[in-house]
Image (cartoon, rainbow, N blue to C red; front, side, top):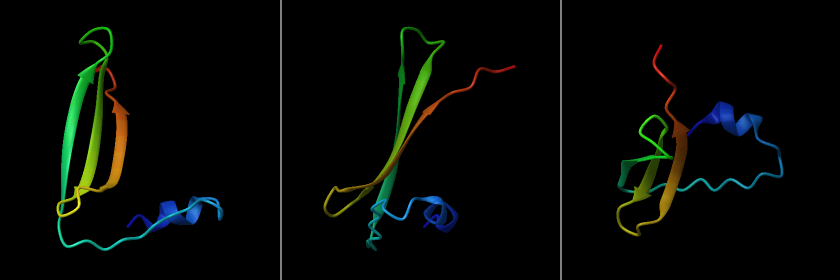
Length: 64
């Protein structure tokens, strides 16, 4: 659990804290218009129910 993030959220932001027995994470990559514009998503799901526990979208920064 990301306690610093929870402390930064507005008090009216709903947050569900759920304990699960097993979870798995996966990543998916895609490209927007061309391979020069990659995007990704990480998601974590509970194995038993298939419920999404968390997800993060991202953009790959260009290499210098």
